[in-house]
Length: 463
Image (cartoon, rainbow, N blue to C red; front, side, top):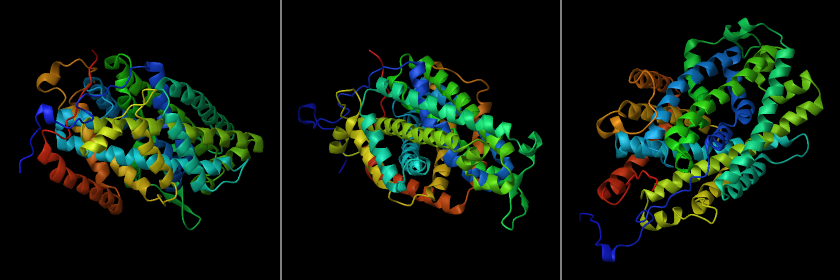
């Protein structure tokens, strides 16, 4: 039986029959603070980068630098599309509008996978950095961080910008301390940054191949991935046509510096390749200074992780809210997820992403780092395709920030991202592919047959 719209007098009200609008309450400073907090440079430096040291050794800084340069092209795509399609739906709203509804749905699933998995994984690292003052179970500590972040996410966005701003200052200080100490205790010269050496399993030294660097680029892209948060916040930014692009580019530049400079310092300051591969940055800091400084840095990192949790919950809830407003789910689910609380935040969506995040802290999520890297790369690929299509028809003359070197920039980015995906581990590709296949089935069996009443991506406009 063909699915049709109900007559107006008998229609069941749904979340997007009267589209809810988020309140515009932040400018470029607040947006940059929130977005940079989602990149969470210090927690990335202390939680994600050590894994890269283990596999890439002295080539870690070079790999992150290459990833940051690639992210400039990605940031250009986000800036143009985020100002052309300013919606809390972020990537999926942009891609749906420009590349089709199925492509937008797949981007939504990939982005939801990234933002749902990363917060609890990072949150579980809190216990390690609180160890100097209290001994906590990593799962319990992570769950506590996620619940605290959920409570903060229920507040007004402007209040959260100030909270995350204070935490951000502390984590930048921690990164600066690491950089100063590493450079002051340098054991090798700048030429070591391109020497491509890593500690071998037999106690010797191995050479890092170009292929290994390409494989590591998926994680390197993830290192600064949070700059896309500016797009999710575009619906709550004042003058989004201008401020979204400025926030995206400013955040990418700041995060690259805050992460890359300490990575260079650690590479130069590590006493040997084995210590560098171990990636225990807190121990290095203590060796370079004293236990008090090591404790201070560890506590700053713990606050950075809490900060990241708050911003990621805020971001995730906006994505889920927007998907309900755009009727991605059955009507009762849409109605509930699109509810706004007294502070103007989507409180049901916030609880929906925060509470399960706390539960995920009790699950072994180690392998999902690789899946997250593949998902981020795939998401960037689809965004680049949408950017390639952004100047067709009515979109050609739409009010938006326009990237330089179009269409060469998105074309080059597409080619590079496809190659990076081809070099990832098969298991990570299969996991991500399986999730994408399930999402495609949901599209084919539920959303597509109801194309007139489901997945109606809306772009809010100011009155």
